[in-house]
Image (cartoon, rainbow, N blue to C red):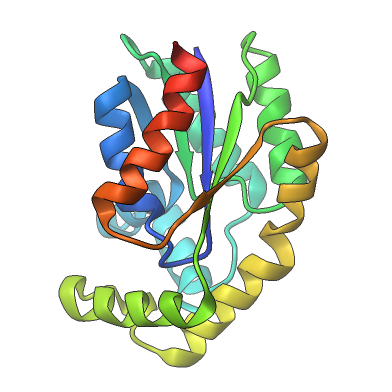
Length: 192
């Protein structure tokens, strides 16, 4: 099974593109954000705890996320692989993900990184708040904190993956279709 990481700062289009890529290539889309929001919506204890953390734009504890992902991988059937959206977010999480995948005879095959400039990100997040009502996209201070957290904690993963030869940058500006075509070419290169 193939495993792809899709990266980019908040508002870069990871979620939109992930759903389309998963459908086209029969990949299981693993969005940790969606998984955590489902916990929150269900009102579980984990959900309540995570809600407080996410409301501040901070990251969820690694062990919780790895456990949720491992359960989804172990339960998946009839899939060509997995597309990780929103995880890992730190080098430590990347190492934990690698370890968990290796234990299952799998590896990270590619890191697809959507490059989008800061002003475009803020514009997209504010628009998303208007369209979807996501509270974490409404407050400019939370938006800036989320982008800062991404830059400080997540961007080092790029160097980690570059050293492993799996980093693949993608221009994340343009129409949804144009960006999808760019991503599809890279995914096809691994499948074909």
